[in-house]
Length: 349
View (cartoon, rainbow, N blue to C red):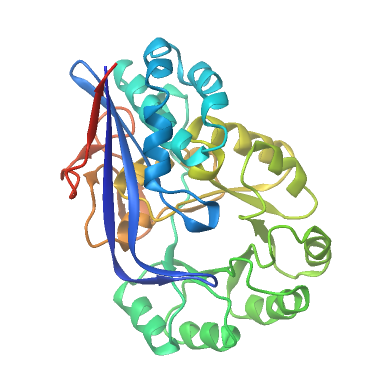
């Protein structure tokens, strides 16, 4: 078996701006596990907020080559348990490896990954399309450029309500709002009233992740449901979010991949919470992995590859919010370009 690490620099169609940062390039690491004629693919993007870098992911994955080799015949759940202690301080790296292992395992079984799990895809939710923070004129332009039935709008400015009022003039699509920790308690409660009247479905992470007292007040007083993102990173956080949020947005890179995400989503549903998975501007490699979880979800934000001007792979496709699966097994991914920096590390295990 080969462990192949490929760093990419994903270029965005537009500057992607949220309440705390902006970027035009999204660094990403694609992990390939190759066994004979079959390969499995995983991905994790870098993120300064969580201290995740391509260099650290590469170093930490390289350091456990022997552990990967010794446990390559396990099923994904048991593999995750063995690898977790080695990568518990680098969940992004664990995610990329877990995605690749799940993909490869399902391909060896001759099945799509969601089929291996026994999921029914008949009632999959559609994905939103994200409009990042910009001038009102540019946000309207982005919306017109991409007609879509469902949008996620990034907010956290002094003109938030004005932005949504203007966008509403140009579409009857459903809106979701993501403030990325950019609001206060009073702002959230007040804004929710205006936003509900403007066709907003829910609010995502309006307060800082650690503001649990404030979030309890929002939970009790907001006229719109509130979904946790930054407050829900790992499995233990799901229970913490119960009765503070109406739902949780699980990010694969933050929780360590598909294996742990599945457990989190099941737990959330058992607690009566809404379930969502979001992306971190991954290419089609990561997006195709998210697609395998759709039957477990009420909401999904998997538009990462749609925001790019240079994708890394083919896999699932998305048309007007509807996800179509690849004909290939596993997550259905096939790489379409080599790593631009030609720094791929290949190790025989």
